[in-house]
Length: 427
Ligand SMILES: [Zn+2]
Image 1 (cartoon, rainbow, N blue to C red):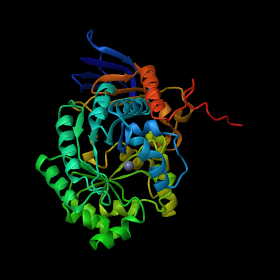
Image 2 (image 1 turned 90 degrees about the horizontal axis):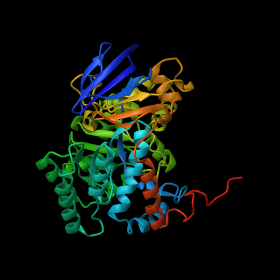
Image 3 (image 1 turned 60 degrees about the horizontal axis):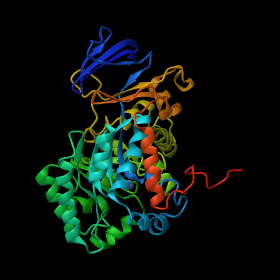
Image 4 (image 1 turned 120 degrees about the vertical axis):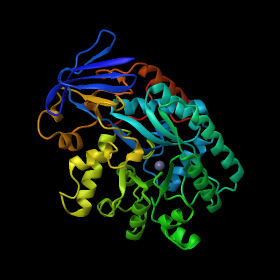
């Protein structure tokens, strides 16, 4: 399988790109398509690396717009958990396909997922052509330790057969939903098999005094003591970390993924201390969190909010630049998240931007992408040399939308009428 891109703009010059077997083999001004290549005419569109979403619960696209604007615990207890008990693998498959559709459209090619029926999520990622690290949420604070451990091992077996674009991970949900004994068990299992671990850490204020009361130390120190603070750990949120915890996380080489939009929407009450995390030397990535709590998977929005929030918090407009924000959103500041450079010998994952859009008319590119653009500026998305979106068209999109709507209706998340959102009139 080979691909030839013509008429792209890269680093200020017209270039072509060829990919063979998923890898970039030529990139530059004198690249010419071969007869056997699939052709993609960029028509003057800019060639850029793609985005990486460091934390989400993709299939929660089915829950988008359901129970918004409630306090976190009421949202979970009254809205989300009762429906999640009815979730079947097919729901997760189509919910994840819907998420993949949105990500392809808005330039995200790799994501870190934590959700039920991970084998169905992995199948959806595979069929959509994207890349992901997929993991089942692990919870045993309800006393179901044996069942949780069996499910974790089973998910690793199933995910190991999910294909080369999918990596298996372990996802203890949080320090307050997994027992200490099981956190140690997960740490050993992850270490034995060399697999990454994702966990929510210090998202809400209450987590800190609860952890101190239960374990005599703050969350990051506790996580370290059970063996889960390693260079293979991705910590989501980290909003309430203090200086000593940031130093410890940096020393252990763990990654923090910040989710600024979800944090604001759920009103967690504090801004992730990015400037101090950067000073400590922590690797940082960007995530949307689930579409139930964001509600978008368009990482362009999270980029802008991240940069603005950090500037505002620091009372310093130079605190975070557009270029730095772009590096974070493309995974360059946290290699574990799976970013590649755009160059010969690298996986053929890239985006082509639309031409003729006002947001990108002129001016510095990182600033235009971070402050002015949305995911709608992406014209074409390529992963492993395969064109997933060509000039805004994605093959099979109608079926994904229809099947996801069927699942949402079965779960009572969408009304049984022609338009999924037609139950309210806006005046
Ligand atoms: Zn989350």
